[in-house]
Length: 298
Image 1 (cartoon, rainbow, N blue to C red):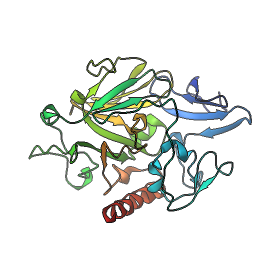
Image 2 (image 1 turned 180 degrees about the vertical axis):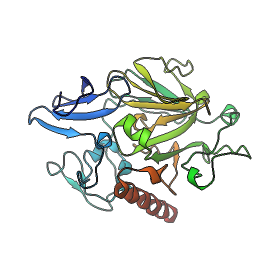
Image 3 (image 1 turned 120 degrees about the horizontal axis):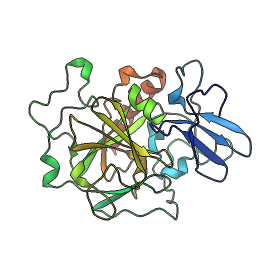
């Protein structure tokens, strides 16, 4: 237990020979990690009451794991293939062609695999079908800022379905997501429950494998892996048939952004007005807009 942590003993999970991560067994929040050989400790920035003036985001690490660069194209910071200053720095304009790790499960054109680090939670996402548009949902803050007039979807638009058989995805900076994950930025894909299946073909179950649940507010439900602490799903009574899927779990052949499956919202970060680290989220918001313009010119 780290000095200063007084909420009880966290759960531990070894992500590698050298690194052990610690998370809350009740809500899944990642709190800190420890590099065993050096004894160095890294605190998850989202659990801090304050980051500006306390912690500074300096670089992106282990970018080679993403294959496509992940969110590094949206946050202009130095990028490293592995540990900062201990691996090769990735120069601006670099075209990512990293090979995926040998143990990754390859995804077909019609099924996208998802899994947590330990493999206790595994599922598949199918391409949109007729049933994908049979549900209804209010607008998300990602597309219609709630502080500008509410979320009523009077025309029942199917905003989660995008051209090319893709689903909408975006980033969130709300307090609830920050505290539930342990990080300032949470990436979600909006997928109808009917399109999420267990690996045996059965419908999604929130009790499958090592999945655990936590009610972060009345009518709001979050799920995480009880073994490795991975953030998995968000769902609610308001739209029970449309599930937020944590993008970090997806194993798309194209990389971490899964652009062959997801269409990223770039006009805003969800609840960016509520961000604790306003400088970081402002940079992310600007980066998303710039990336969108660059993509349009390709």
